[in-house]
Each structure stands twice: as structure tokens, then as C-alpha cells.
Length: 357
Length: 63
Image (tube, rainbow over all chains, first blue to last red; front, side, top):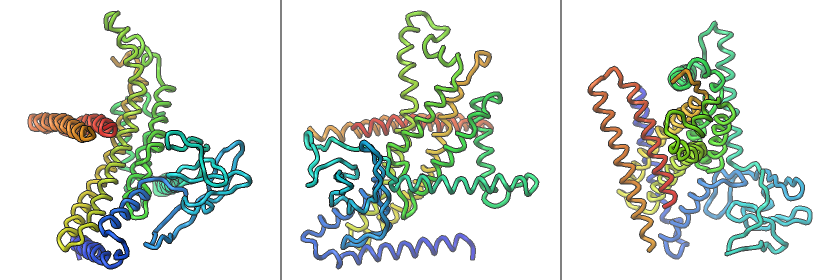
């Protein structure tokens, strides 16, 4: 059979199973007093779990509250390094007792508390968090993505030696992309002289963001790039590289822009200085917002499917969610491309020499 | 008035939509004039659209 027919059969069977299960949900939630509130609360719960980071790795969870998964180690710094398993938190319900310190998990953040679980509060928000270096679900996915990238590119690099310059295996898919980044993004913007020292970072950031976005779309995936901390770290690295590999002309253009009259120079200096911070900041916000909003919309529409337990509402929601999912695939690659391209532009302005004007 | 949040969000979407629409329109006109340059025009269009969307999202989060 042709691949088109396979895809049609796959889509249709997915469609049938998911809408059928959505309609069966009606009987099992009869113990709720008000059905719309119950199912909406459950959907909110699933959404929050998928979008937020968590200290344990839950694969599936049943309606009675049992979870299939495993707890992840918690590493915190509280006048000394403390490592314990997050199963002591019992999914946020209990106070963890470690030595003589007590910790409580509120909204996925760890706070120091006393034996009864009271934390010092201010305006209703707890205020003494501890420095948290734990291996959370996002960290597991980042490590996993890094490992996958390392294996894929290692096989590409090794195959160059073995097969006389022609890659084999997964390298055959990756090589044209690497060449595209080198030719169209790096050389076109940064120029022949200086592009080589930026290439490792540009390649890494492109494939890393693309793979993390794609992993977030899979059923068991965690939404890693939809987390402000992760995108902030990536934008911070771009900022550090632009600042520390910048040539004299870059700083001259910021503080004392040549070719404009003197009053304008004084006006432009603070604006350009803010611009150096705002540009990586916009990189961070762009990636975060695209991924976070995309996932929120996708999960909301999938949740709609369970609220409309009708024979016409559920399939329509599923179809909409399917097409949104395909759009999300495009957005995943596009956001990686835009991040890489803009980073290359910032590096280009940093490493520009006066003779280029 | 808490509804002002949503009016602000609507204004942001109008602004972003107008901006990206204008870029898309002029990009298409340019490609129609000179089909050989369509690669470069596409690249520039995507960059400009991403920048505008970046502002749009940042403002959307504030609203």
C-alpha cells in the first residue's frame, strides 16, 4: 500500500478511538456532583501537570489518584547540600522530614517549613524558598535530548571517516541541515572570516531547541521550552557570547555611534545599551510564549473534546486539535530557526569590523 | 474594570496582525516582481514576522 493510504488509515483509527473514549468518560465520572465542574477540574489538573515542571516523573495517572511513574531526586541547598527523594513529598501533600529540617512543596516549589507544614507568609504567599537544584522532569528531558543529539551527531561524524565523505544513517538527514545553517545563516550573516568560532553554538542551539520542541509534542513529553527558565538560559548564553566576543567597533557603535551629530550620540547611548539587553530578552520571550501558548491552546481544545460529550462536538474538537498539532510541528522548527538566525545576526553585529561598512 | 485586559489583548492582536500582514503583502509583491529573489525575500519575511510576533507575545503576557 502506498504511504498515503497508511496515513489515512492511521488518522481515521486514531480519530475513532479517541472520540469513542471521550464518550465513554460519561459513565465513569458519575460520582461527581456536578458533571461540568468535575470534568473541568480534571482537565485543568492535566493541563497544569503537563505545562508545569514537577519533581517526579509521572507517566500516567488513573482517576483514583494512583500514578505510574517514579520519583526524582531532590537536591537543595539550605546551609549545606541535602539530597533526598521526592517521594517524601507524596505529590505535595505531606511535609518532607529530612534530618531536622522540614520542607513543603507548594505549587511545585520547595519551601522551608516547620513540623506542621506552616511556612512564613507575606500577603498570602510563602516567602522562604530554598535554592533548588533538583533533577526535575524538565532536567530529565534536557539530558535525554542532549544524549540523543550526541549519539546522532557522533554517528554522523564517524561515518565521514568510514564511508569516504558520504554520511550514512541518521547523518544523511542531518547533513543538509548543518550545511544550510553554515551557508545561509552563519556565512551569509557573519561573513567568511569569523563564522567558524560561532558555528558550534549555532548548530547546538538549533538542534537542541528543535528537538526539545518536538519532544514536548509527544504524548509523554514534558513542555521543556515552554518554561521561562530554560529559554532564559539559552538567551543568556547568546548574550554572553555576543558580549565576550565583541570587537571594538561593536562597543563604539553602542556608546559613541559614529557619523551622527553630538546631541544624538548622547541620546543614542542609553538606548543602544538597553538594546543589548532587550534583544536577548526578546529571544527568550519569543520562544517561551510560542511554545507555552501553543501547548495551552492544544490542551484546551483537547479538553473541549471531553466536555462536549456529543457525537459531533468531540470529532470536531479532535480534528481542530489535530490540525493545531500539525501547525505546532511547523512552529517547533520555525522557532528554532528564528532563534538561530537572530543569534547569528547578533553575533554578526558583534564581530563586524570597520572595513565591512 | 477587569474586562480591559481582554480589550488590550484584542488591540495587541490587531497590531501584530496588521504588521505581519503588511510584511507578507509587500513580500508577495516583491516576489511577483522578481521571482529569482524569492529565497532571500522569504528569509527576510520570516525574520520580520518573528520579531513582530515577539513583541506581540511579550505584550500579550503583560495583558
